Amino acid sequence: MLQGDYCHEVESYLCRKNDGHLIRIVGPSFELVSGWAARGIPLKIVFRGIDRCFERYYARGPRRRPVRVDFCDADVLDVFDEWRRSVGVLFEKPAADEDLDTSAPKKPHHSLAAHLDRIVGRLVARQTDPATASLDSEISRTIERLDSLRGVAPKARGAARARLIDQLALLDGELTVAAREGCPADVRAALARDAAIDLEPFRERMAPAVYQQALDAATDRLVREQLGLPRIAYE
Image (cartoon, rainbow, N blue to C red):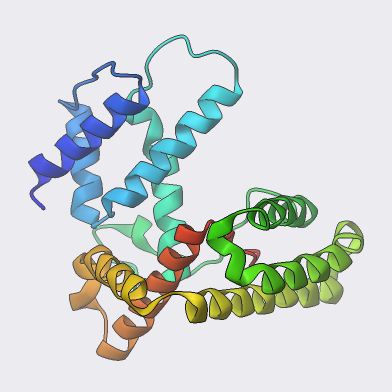
């Protein structure tokens, strides 16, 4: 996609989020969004970052003025970083763009106990959704296991905390497998095509085996997003 078209898509989305109030992406704002395009940030990731920015803005109370795209930069980059880590798009640090390095672990924005509370709440909500009816037993089992961890999470330290985090990663993987196996073949194929489009800017920098792993992980992520399933792993 050309940078001009990319910026137009972002401008249109921002307009809808601002209840129709148009804020032109020109000057420094155009350079910012063009930079997102040059990095290969998928539009859906940009939109998620904008959504996150608006959620935080609304949480502060009634809006007083439209939100400019510049205010969304940190959220867009955060969501992009989360996406890269989840699908395995990790690079050596380029000399001209040091902030692309993702080798160091990123510190979570919330406590382990708060993470568990949030995940359980989202999974409970999925139990009443027809879209995830085929996963009811797996979701119920996951909630039970997470509930057993919630009591010990606030006091978990050192090795005990590390074991708890490992258990969350295991549960995350099991739920992903269940979602993948329950997804109709035609739906998964369509999502795999979307995932390939998202990964296209990075494909030349990845070995074939690494690309395939990233494609599978990106497809799994889209399956889970379509079903509204949260990421259980704590990173």
